Length: 243
Length: 303
Image (cartoon, rainbow over all chains, first blue to last red; front, side):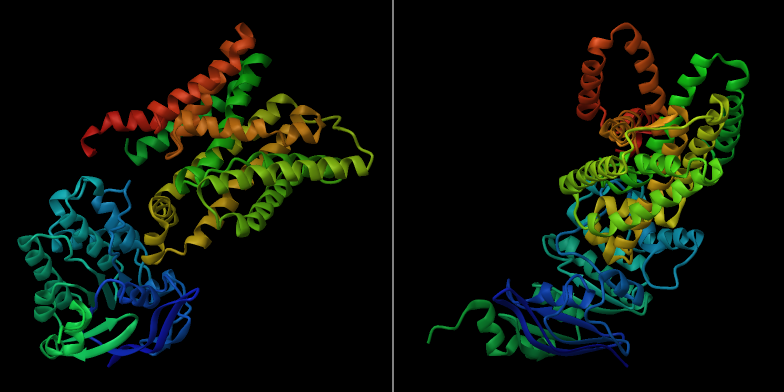
């Protein structure tokens, strides 16, 4: 079943084109990688899918409904969850409270407070933050804050989860842990995931398919192995090869 | 403190406060009335500004509108219907203000609410001058004891409302908005609707208080009813007591009324200076307010 479909989606900021004619599909249960150099339009694509911004062109369909132009909270209620590249925890709420708010809101129908709190406890264990549940986010390491970011999004019961560079800035051991966690929650929550990541190794292991953006346009789509061998992709990351 | 013991404590306090008119002198009664009035105003304000972080510096406008509704309805409507109508008018006014105003945050919101309150004041001044009314007198208002009991009801209602909101889903939502509006929106919180609902709710009781206090003043003069000093005092109480939980504004109001009574009589010339210094000290060193500090002392492990 096709869960998400983008058709000719574009975004202009004044005279600057951040994204042009982007089309791709995501089937339910897939993990799709979104790649590209800095400024390629990856985060813009996320903001359009999650409703933080409105597309200038094109259509976005989610679960058979047209969603472009809807606001972010409406999309969360339909089942689209996201994390932010620069994590945005609720700074004056504890780790547990951060997750509990997500569980109280998110995908409709909203649960009762008791159900939401029980769900927050489950997720605390699932993302290994239970021991830190009474801490404030400011006292956590970057790796822990990234975990919290995922946990809060997960608490909203999403069907589609957008992960924006959740491995960036982590050391090898932390990245491996985070990687295993993503794989575990994907299986446990019957999730569909789109993940923005620079770390090719991680994308190779996680994704069945990747979409590569360059200067706001899609230049390649396929299995990670095919894409990694595509000369246009290599050029987009390292510049045109000297010949 | 558990929820049950909190309710018992609140019931005892309410009973004791209800008996004040029976036992106290008129002076004590008017001090107690002031305390309850400022509690009600600051609690209503905190319900929105304390929880959302959108600091309204214009809550005097709702108080003034309430007073104006009362004098316009004087001898037209029964008094207590006029009080309810004043609350309705305050809510409707806040709702229509909220749409444009709640789109800006931080200092812009502060200035905007202040500006609109001042603007409204001069509109009322102009209307009254156009009608040829320079101050309206209200003759035959209810007794001080009756007004006291009415304000007590308002204070109790605003306390209960704040406590209920603080525990509710919408309360969790507004606190998330205070921390990060974009992130709040991304987890499914309708930020615009949540802010507007609480802003509207926070205006109703101040408008009813304005209506009752017009009866206490027995006259209406727009410059006084819409005085920005009311807004400043509300914010001061929120800062002194702490605006994050219901006991905060009550402690702040008690503290302010107490030092006012002590200082106003003994040192009127330096009263405002001392108040200003106190405010600066709190903003710099006790930003969480009296109650917030007590709360932190009770469970220091969190930070």
